[in-house]
Image (cartoon, rainbow, N blue to C red):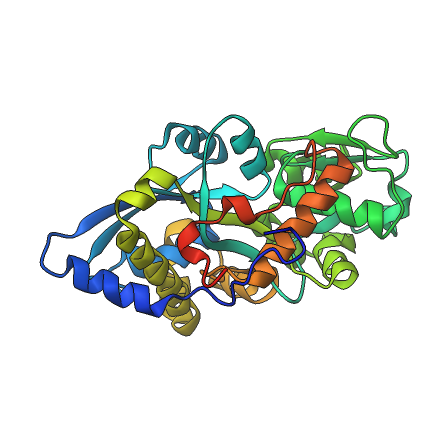
Length: 334
């Protein structure tokens, strides 16, 4: 299968296989599927219905745990979890090290309004447009992350900036996410990319503004919504019990749907635990991120384009198609 007609996927709900899964395991004990996801209050809302017994299964029990990025990376390599949330940019690197990962579904995609990729400055900053970054300094939580690579793509493709990490039009500093707002406030950096909860607080404070909404820019330029993260597993685990992982996909999608249809219940519960305004979660699901829970031809097209653009920036050594990273159970008629 070549890259141009990468997949004949459609939407991969696979209801027939899921029904088969229920039948195959009906008489046995529930299989435990361990799932690790990014430590982020917004994602606690995504899995809330699973962790609080609102979405159940006769086949499997999902044990979900949130991990910080360094722990996620370590756990992915050690195969500590059955399913793990993984940044899209990390799949080719894992393959180059001999670590085989297979995509089950899409865990994080840009929402249609295209917020969440803002370039933030103080409200009284002299910077008015992205081109004003020339000769300045911008801070980011991770210079080689999927999210920041998407920011660089927009700044380079739409605004003509050289975004090379060394020798580019502006200096780019990697700063721990928790320190980014303070660095911006005291002028240690002229601009910054903020994590989503920080961006929401920046909007509410009125002390900051954006000079670019790069997620929206990329959507306008490429007519695609980029994907930041996918849920993956390992070939040997999938082969050993395909039905259980089909059931995981069903439950995950059902958990997302529960959160969206019971917003007050879920968002208020997660708010109490995290200390964030419940309105943050509504803002996040509406303006910043989609959690599709499936994998479609459009998702494949989006990842292929992202890999192509990432190779142009030098983040990837070469552009690779997403097709080899897909679980073969998702190839309907391909």
